[in-house]
Image 1: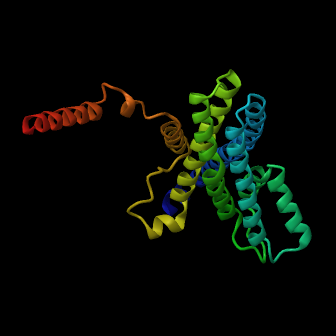
Image 2: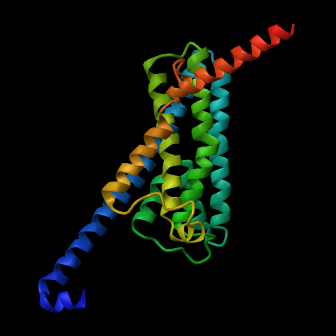
Length: 255
């Protein structure tokens, strides 16, 4: 590299420009992904609130209460997390962070801090990147997945089968898929994770384009229903039916 730079001075400049371009592309991709996920998460919360209103108006109070409990549980656990994260900070900082949770803007704030490369503040329990990841996990477990299950069950068994219900269900599914994909993706790209568990982490390739392709593929797999497993022509289903038929035949012969 040194000899090539000495013989061709323009090579070093070209290498620097290429590196800067790749870094800028990576930052743009990260910003789009993080802000897109934050917007989707906030929108999912708003659609859940609207579906609570729909459930109450159509007499489906059970689904409304279940969704409301899921929403309140998510907010309560996030408030508790924010309290421990900022318990050594000032009261003003604590109040501001809790307001982010109550106004459903916490995902966007966390994404912004990660994009700008904010450092861990003095007294904070963890840095912005880990904080964002834990908030995502809490949201996934307390709201995204339960909300999707509740709305799916309500759609299949209740009268709320309007286009609004379908749209809200799709948003919930996409949010859960996007969140789980983002958690797996960020964990794989974590340097410490790759060093400590090299046999498991490292499936995301280098290069912005390849990373986008892997992320989209993971998202689609997470968001799509298990059609092959549910299909009557699925090889696994055929095999299971064959085993059951053989078992019934043996049982009848023994009788």
